[in-house]
Length: 234
Figure (cartoon, rainbow, N blue to C red):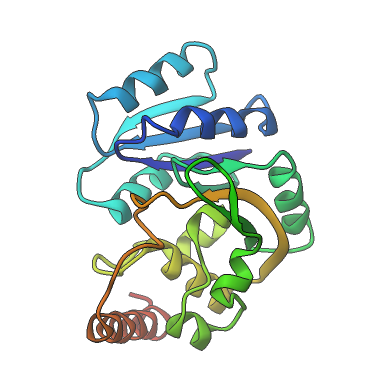
C-alpha cells in the first residue's frame, strides 16, 4: 500500500492539478493524506469536493505550526508500507510511482528522484534539479548541502522507527529523513526527472534567503541530533 503525505497551506491555486496527477498512479487501496495548515479555506473546499469522487483522498487539519510540523502530521496519518512526500504545487509525471516502486523492489529504503524545475506555468527552466543542486549521496555532503528535496522522496515505513521523532528545530524534515536513511538504510537515486517542480516565488523551500551564520547553526544542530540519535538512540 502506498501513502502520499501532502502538506498544504493556501494551496488552492495548484492543489487540484497536483492531486489529479497522482490519482491515476495509485491502486484502489492507496491513499493521499492532505494535511491542511489553514483549514476552513478554499484549499479545504477543493480537497473535500475531490473526496466526494475519490475515497482515496483523506483530509485532515494541520497543526498550524509550520511546514515541518505539517509534514509530520501527514506522515502520522499514513497507513501505507511506502510513504511518498508531496508538495501541493508540483505535478507528478505518469511514470513516477512505477519507477520509484521498482527502486524499492531493488532494495531501497529511501528513493530520491530527479525533477524538472519549472516556472508557475510549468515551463521548464532547468531540466535537472540534481544538476542544479549538485545532488549526490553522502552524509557529510548532505549536511553541508542538502540533496533531499521532499517532493522527490519516498521511503519505506520501517524507517519511521529511526526517523521519528523528528527533532523539533531541524530546518527541514526532508534533510533529516534523508540523512537518517543514509545512516541506517539503503538510498537509491533515480536520475530521471519524475515530477515538474514548480518554482513560483511562494514555495516554502528553494527560495529562502538564509544567512551564512544561520546555515552553520542549523548544520551544528543537525550533527548534534544525528549523533544523539545514533549513539544514544534519542
